[in-house]
Image (cartoon, rainbow, N blue to C red; front, side):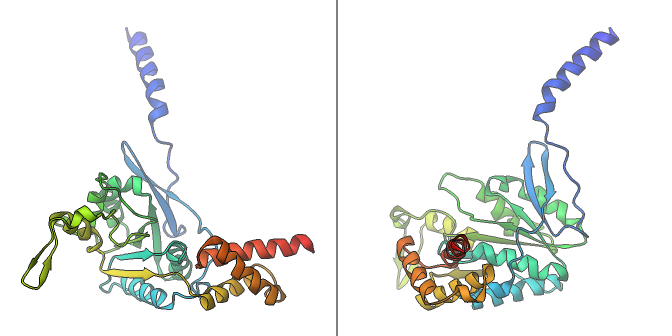
Length: 287
């Protein structure tokens, strides 16, 4: 009977084992400065990751106001002063994600630790936050390219952690998010059907209030706009020199950069970087 029971238990384990998450690599926050949060059926685990690149804040041009505001907010948080959750929203390729990466590279030495959470793992955000509450370090929990569809309930976990529970987020955790949408949820004309004028005041309907309520819980809003041509060319020159040599940026490169942006239908830091990769790569092949 004991052999039969052992055989059956072994069979159960063989069937269950493929569904179990892999054994996580332990994060050492004294050594690791960034990690990914991955949710699974038993909760979730943190996986340490090295910084993606050596991007610094000084490399990001055309967003001086946004840089200074986010650095000031983050430094206040690292020193134990009051600080706000931050929403970086606006034009695609405007430098929102790059700013967060550069922030980590510049401020990791001051104690900043970053945990990135994918939108699909936001349901496990309360579990993550409670885990970080017990750590002695200070964390920015970061969600990139955040947006929700109208039927998507994942945003409720984010709302709850931001400002919806009795305890709120712990003192050592801030949430930063980037999005192309200011209010994170899609907006339609029908949302305004219930809006009305009371005297001279506009009162929004429930649909609008629900969509505003999520982004309203971020205390720091930073908007990003498309570059004008002068700023775009300045960024092109910076990245060409960064990837190549000082002589690689010249009148010919300037003309090609303008044509490149015209073909792409816009000017941004991302387009400037992509042009620099193409231009320097072509020069090296020709050489």
